[in-house]
Image (cartoon, rainbow, N blue to C red; front, top):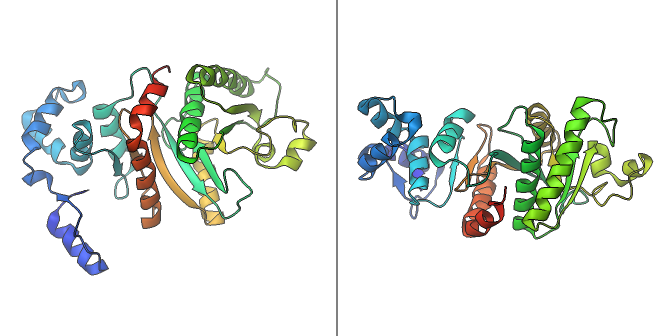
Length: 304
């Protein structure tokens, strides 16, 4: 389903030689659901101070309209963001969909798929959080680690090996940034047990020790099941996650899929304005897989 102006979509499709048969195009202004969606917005606290006309105009926004479709289960998953800044897609998701019951942290996951198959899961790395939380707390880092590891296992059936990244490897906890990663690692291990999620979690650990066995050996942590074999990377903050993921993508030409928004009641992805058609297809496949077994994910995440 595509949300937007039918004439513009048809015109662009024709210019690109794309057949639109089988694609449902929905124009918010002409939708029979619009009045219901307006009432849905009125009932939400975030929109209570708006006038009736302002609420109606808000509902006509394609991002908001699509999110309301997701809320009403008229869609199973949502992808947005390719033509808007990130907040345009994220804000309605957080305000209208909200997080799953018991989940305190909504974060994001980026999947990087590289030709170097000796890294991650046959060349695939799962990275969080690269798009939502600027300065995560230790509790939030633990949530990010477990939700990311859970989806990595769900998509690949491989054992998640989580690296809680830092500028140190088993560094001195006198330094606050190191102490936070070490505390987050402990919390993540405890949550993994409550989830019955079979995973390995290591932290604090540097990126070279996480991905390269020789470096891990030199740094004295070769006995860790994560060292040199990490497939889930948890960054200490949004700066490092966003920079690292884009650096890898640009310098290596790796495929990237996401950001997949974790912890929501419904599957959704907020993709970059720089996303290619291939990137969008990959993100669609991931949220589609989430939608297929979303009830299972809800059950597992209810303990958070």
